[in-house]
Amino acid sequence: MTNAAAILPKNEIHCAQCGGVLNPDEGQVFLTCPYCGSAVFLDKSKVVFHWSLACTVSPQDAAAGLRRWMAGNQTVKDLDTKSKLTSSTFQYFPVWYAKARQNDKERIYLEPAAATSISEIKSLDIPSGDLKKYDPALDAQAVAPSVPYPALLDWLIGRGVQADQVAEAALVHLPVYIFKYDFGGQSYTAMVEGASGKVFANIFPAKAEAPYFIVGVVATLGFLCVSTFPLIGIAADGGSGAGIGLGLLACLVGALVVAVPVFILAAVVSAKV
Image 1 (cartoon, rainbow, N blue to C red):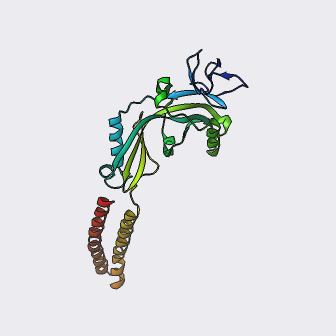
Image 2: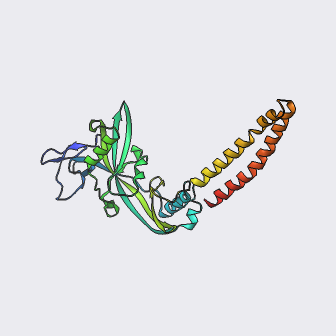
């Protein structure tokens, strides 16, 4: 792909690919160049390429992927079976795609180009070879971008990327499934990206860390106490071999005694949390 950004010269708007003069209708922001056929997006300050990703995940596979994520290690126990799916929608969501060169290395940055509660979408990895020319037939399902290009530059500057380091910028519409579900009296939102099947969610019923922390503390204290038995045996018997032997035996028995309640406690926590 070539450089995606073309500065708007005064009253003329030029294609980011061939430089041909574009004549958009009033209010038109998505345009196909009549000279080279490139799909472009008209921002107030830039003309950039307009790409999309093909959707390869069916609605059924997206729902199944969401359930697998719910049953994973990040979420609370039985979220996949105890949650209630309330709605699902499909759309093409816009993100800013910026390729920056820093220290002779290229890095891709993504930033949502419209309001969303799931900002984790910016962590998605989009291979440049997967980008396709945007098809106007997608307009009915496409969310209009509301975050301007200068906002992207401000975000990049906050990440240590200067404007002159941006080698390429584009608007990309991603196929996404938006799922809403209820759990524990609260409503949550998750997004399944339709090209990779990856699940994104900023807020979700996560596993509670406190019970696992308590199990760790109990196990640490118990085995720490048991480990002092050999030292106590040595001190009690004046350093003789018999004292060391008794201490080691007591340590072994004590470890077995401590292990049983620790394993029981861990099993209870894993089954309920």
